[in-house]
Length: 412
Ligand code: HAM
Image (cartoon, rainbow, N blue to C red):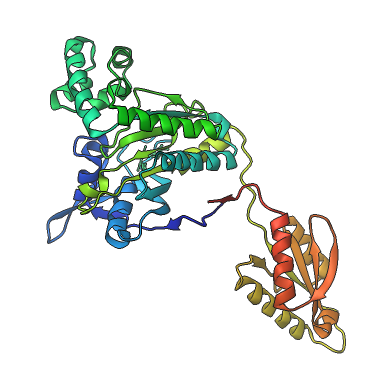
């Protein structure tokens, strides 16, 4: 689905030391407090956890291995684990696809990162079913000024808060009260001072640049002052793509900027970074709910043999030539299918068509002897015989594939 040209794939372990997550995500968050699967590890008596998300480990790995070569963009996908009460769209094991851009502090990096998420949702035909909610957690100075004002506000409205929010106020975890699910809390915090209303000029200006960049790309969003996200590493821009089609599990893709995370994890340098992760299970449910067509698979060329039982070439000679052709094309990155055991040409062509072949390469006795191959474009039906050399066959097939460009493919 994704042809990643400028993103590098990164894989991190599924089991990590618990400390990585508690330092990165924060000890007072629901994820670390209640949702991690944590075990004491044998003789060393160290605690390890199943990863609840991907960002912390990507930053840890990148700081160790790429710190002299930034900015870098990474993508990953794989299972994450959170102790949840399972329900539709909320699982204890779920899959995330994530993107992390490390070492780029420009507001337009925020715009491009959000735009990439927007493009991917569009290519899955679900973007129109989502809303982009955007906020800024501003800079350190704003957050500490805001915190004082928010604590005053919450104390003076203490009795209107839910029990959980009262506890959070007592323990100092006040920002999370802003995105409480409790209806009473929600109506109370509507009147709370927003971060942006007390932001420093630099923070306000940065957020304006992000908004202007999104406007320039025609990406619509609504600023949601209550959006704070449940992970402590965020700074500045945060956002969520939410849907009304999946009941309570509204967020299908979410992310934000985390300029301090690398330093929290021990980097000597500040590595300003930004990223997001999509819930693959929720995206699949959303695609089903709105009957979205799955993206078209990448084009495939089928090699077929025409066994004519002639005198000059045996079936084995022809099939060996087919094998050679497959091997040559595959080693140049072309996806090729060849059903060795199938007999009749007509049957092979029917199978190729049924499986969505973009083109078919036919090798029979005439082609073997004449060092040629017949290529048939399965979309137009046009076919021609061309010399069977890499110089001719490769660009011919590549052009054919480019012409049948698939709309589900995202080049990033
Ligand atoms: P998150 O909001 O915790 O962010 O998760 C991202 C997405 O994963 C959610 O929007 C949702 O679609 C999906 N998700 C989360 N929990 C579950 C669950 N229990 N079952 C099914 N799907 C779920 C993060 O994880 C951050 N690491 C995102 C990020 C990357 N921020 C910066 N870079």
